[in-house]
Picture (spheres, one colour):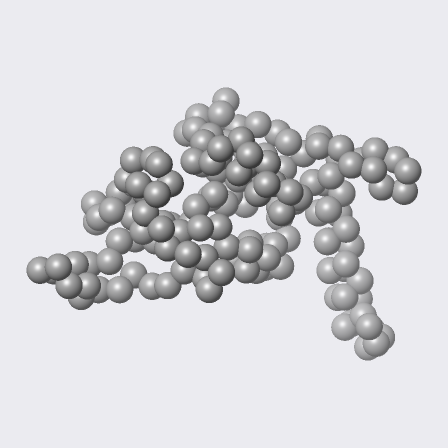
Length: 152
């Protein structure tokens, strides 16, 4: 299982006398740094440093790299309470592999959405599980082609 956030985070920059003296790194190019006020939720603080976390919009580049690298069986989209119902619905359309969502810290806050149904070859199938199966099948086929030297 992989857990992803609706808004990716980074540790806050080190700031001294109003000047950034320690850069905590970039977000992905398709992700725009925003603020907690823009999202409409209270600031999050890092556990170790106590600095305000930096926050950005969702990155499809990061998401696709994660899918390729980990090939997860289940994906939990966390902090769905940071989105309106419409925003969540739109995001989930872009993330058909997501199998679970959560809006809180407790296990009872997790909702299994892997049973979302779609039609494939005239039959209803669980969409998230079907997408993961298709992706894993494609990866197996590519691996087999590489091992046997068969052209793609």
